[in-house]
Image (cartoon, rainbow, N blue to C red; front, side, top):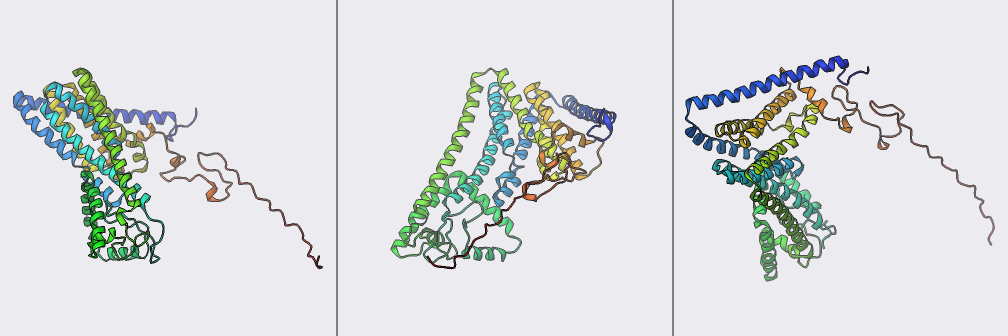
Length: 450
């Protein structure tokens, strides 16, 4: 029999998996016993009607705290302009789950569930809008950037009023160098200001004020330029000048924000946000229509299924986190708030006797507890369960094939130069074919004129 990938033979693999499953079974048993013990304590000390009233207040309150937990991640994405750090699949799955839960709450007359999911849906749409705003601005700024040079020979600049992180700089020349110098003189305390400006720009963009403001400044800036008056900071931009004195791309006769390029940018913004609103409205409208057409039991099944689907994005990413021991990929505050929220909703569902409420909450409570165990493993804490066994459930990525002790072994490539070595977990690599250069044919110089 061949050796096991765990390094201890098949018997060692069996012992390892058995100990892991036994530890997880004990952990789940203790978790459920804790939930049932709290449930019995609530029933013994509080009347059912009073407990329902208390949970109707506590559960939405804990959920609101959880809904605001991603604000730090969103602010980081806005300040850096990097939309890739946002857990967008989790936001979309949560939005679908909220829509089904709203339909179920309306059919069962559960006001606490209704208010919670309405607020959750609004917050998820807000985070998704922030993600879309970052992506849209990056695309539009790239499209409307002026590639040519101005009348004074300076490189062109992006003719947008401002981006999520402040005024757009576009292709930076000498003026961009001055801007960077001024930003470096502000000291280390400018991060909060950038995040604040990014949040304000995102809120303005989400309400549509930013795009109306760009158009308004364009018109009034050109009017002031025609009248011979200064249009201020954005008036100078509208007149074709940069914020630091550099000219925008194009000729110096004006045009600025109201030029063809900027109208193209506004058109791109309108198209992108129209598509975003159409997809969002179509999704929510489809879910709402299904909720009205289906029975209460069918809507409950759909709500439970959507809740389990919300767990899929973090579960699919768990293998990479365990292999890399990257604790930063697990937001601790969000995990703790989800743990407490699922705990309260599980008790509320048990008091109500509603399986649609308590079943996803119990599973969510267990998943959040396991996620905290993974976080502790990544941080190097002692755990009674070998969490690294979970990594065997996930296929290794191509980058980590042949990793020994956590170190990745790079595969050879043409960019790495010729190689004849054998990489771990890979086939022997062939040397690239050598080029045979043909010597030039001898030439005979003409010594006489024709």
